[in-house]
Image (cartoon, rainbow, N blue to C red; front, side, top):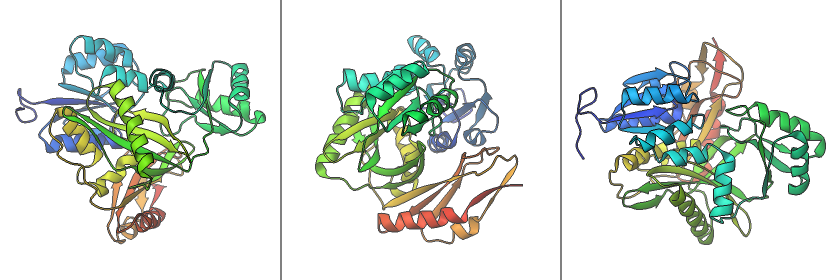
Length: 393
């Protein structure tokens, strides 16, 4: 492989569709290898735009606008970083020779919970929670009756837990339906109803598909609240049998999706079974912990894999933990308080994403801690997170 420097006619160019905190780290890793970067999002000054060579603001759910931009810019690689993209346009562009990471079909399937769940459960036969789909409140109540209570209700397309809730009783049905149909990435009156799995823990298994084979990062444990990640740690303890089952599921699903790059495969660990939950064909928010725990972060792995560069090994350098920092109120502008206290703790780092404004519950920063044990890393990350606060100016 050879290419020229950024901003030259021989440069290798990557276009990122979605420019949040994960995209920002991808851009940084790409630039370390001399790649020219284009950050695209629906609003200006998104985190990745602040470090990219170029930025563009468009409605990425508009197929005409998306196709026009890609054809004008002619990137070597198109890298989706979020779900809310006109994936049909990517499928058509891929037929014309545009390279989409990992593939346009993978982006299309995984943005839609129905598509990926049917692929996993019905085509690939991997273990999943029982599920049903509903197009109306009456169908939703019927699905609850079939699946049982409690059950998990999700929009077909969302991120960071938006629109997701647990329905505990039939009296909660209307509220859960309203939340799911109005709070997803795209307004949709079709939802998925899932069996509530009584799991011992849930993990993310970062799965790296490369030209020379599939690699796995050590499992990442995490805690979610309302479907959104709060903290994560690596490695997560699990039995040898559970790890083999998890890797088999992850390999089966990602092989079916194809392409190269990092996939965040979410799994439930129950007493006797490992269940597939979801997959993201890109670095995962719980994988932010790899910025402190691994020799190569998930972002470095993603860039190497999509460029076809070698990855000799993935090594756990230290047990590590991450803790998300969320805004409690809407503010523009805002300030961050407590940074000096957080950074006074041993082996602690903070990443402030630089989002231009806050909304209630928006993830604005993350604490990263390394330690001799997971318990110490988590405790330190929790303490550091307690020092940090996002405040209106």
